[in-house]
Length: 138
Image (tube, rainbow, N blue to C red):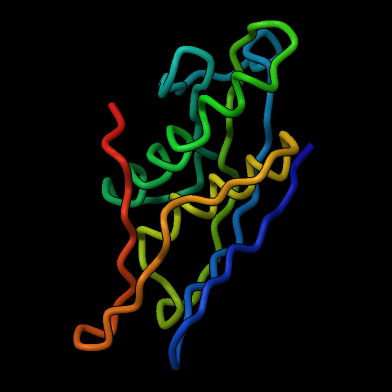
């Protein structure tokens, strides 16, 4: 079943606002191809109509990696999940691609019933950009 999450963050005259729609499947229930494994128990798939830059895709993967351990802890049985990103909506004036990582991480936290805190997001007034800090994830 598709669900939608709205990630919003604002600490200045403008903010980041991303609507993410996705679905979660057990790998045994996912009958389409195009999977990329991002952790031992998580794969990502994109709706075929979704067009992303490599940078945007990498931030989605980073978001999955940020919460992969927490999702694994929530599993009763070790099974692989497919995280399918169906739709992304944002206005270019309220968007930074780094926000995709926090959007997917927060959406998955909501779906798997845990809290994602992440690193603090800092607003750089000089460059008029938000600074995201990510741990080194392989």
